[in-house]
Length: 329
Image 1 (spheres, rainbow, N blue to C red):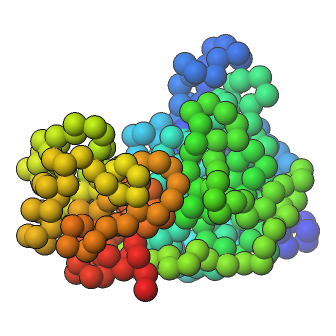
Image 2: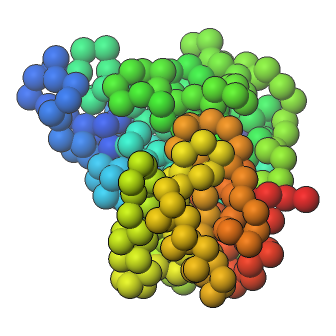
């Protein structure tokens, strides 16, 4: 190994599958490919330039479509990343991931890995076999971001389509477009020119972001999301309780209002101490609720509110502490 290579920052890449590792028989197929067909070594071989940026090591953590990832996988991945960073085995972390639930994994890692070192979650909207596949450049840029000192103390980040995004706020906004990941109110943290990141702001973390210690958590409780709409009944909410859910998030209309049936059922559950969190299905804005009627999720969307509630319950938080996770004083 040359002296130059020895001085490169160490970046650990955990591969989980997804479109970035997808393949199809046709190079014009962007819809019916098989996600998670290519292993970590195949991803690295497609981007030989990556080794000029960092001393890279890879691990195949999973190789599935992201809709198949489970809460126990997130818990295990968080602990592995914390171990890598605490033991000084890496200066930065990259996680390759399918885009469908990428925001959930990124958000989970943002709340559970305690570090100032960069954690970058990266994916692709086109499979590796497609014409103009976006995965190789995304992976190169994600590695450059994880290796960059200016990327420290910004929390977990999402990198696709030349954009650097906060994992806390970013969501997938389009099923197919390359620029799908956005935080339309909060904006991007920065952008890439080739393999060089440029930041708009100095390092900062989202206001009121909760932090959870996963070291003593062995499993996460069941928390379901129930979607509200006109005439929505309460049977799905009750079904969640019956199947063992320890909390429920309602994707409600407006700033946190559900159908009358769901509101009434949630009120009854809240009075028993069962946590019901109301988010907004609009995609933006602040969900608020009188405490006696439930918990407003604030700026956090339904899928991310589910993660906060799971972690709070696993940490044995009481009702007031759970509420503060969404609405810090």
